[in-house]
Each structure stands twice: as C-alpha cells, then as structure tokens.
Image (cartoon, rainbow, N blue to C red):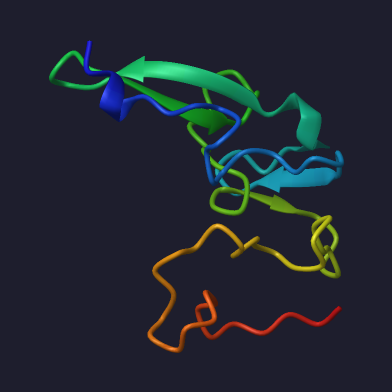
Length: 106
C-alpha cells in the first residue's frame, strides 16, 4: 500500500470544523451535524488506499467539508474568522502574504 496517497484525517483540508455546526450534503440533500462526517478509506483502481471525509448517509458519495458538504448557515465563519485557514500556506500568491487574494468579513 502506498502510504504517500493516504491522508492523515487530522491534516486533511476537507476535515469537519473543530466546532460542530449543521451542514448539508450537495449529493443527497441531507442536513446533519458536522461531527457525523465520517473518515473513510477507499481503494482506487490501482489498489492504493485513499482517505476521505464523507457524508454519513448510506449510499451517498458526498465528500469533503467545504466541497460537497457545506454549512447550512450562510453567515458561517470558522473558528479563525473565515472559511479557510491560510496560515499553513507557505507558497502564497506571489505577494508574500500567504493569502490567495480572498477577503473574509470578520
């Protein structure tokens, strides 16, 4: 098994928020609390394991908080005051500030 393709659930960019909120899956339309989002490992066509945060609804293939699984509150802000935490972005956008040109209202 190629460990480089496996993700650490705690480091995955699509992990659920630290503070549970109500979310909705774009695939199945179900509303539920974000703490129910499940970490699943699947095997790809080459037999390599890959991990994903997934909708807990049986038969649904929605994956990733902020991708297929979104907050139901249109005013949602994460614990850092925005949608995404860019503090870990070392590449930046050429402006040297580590941000990608997106602005978030506090």
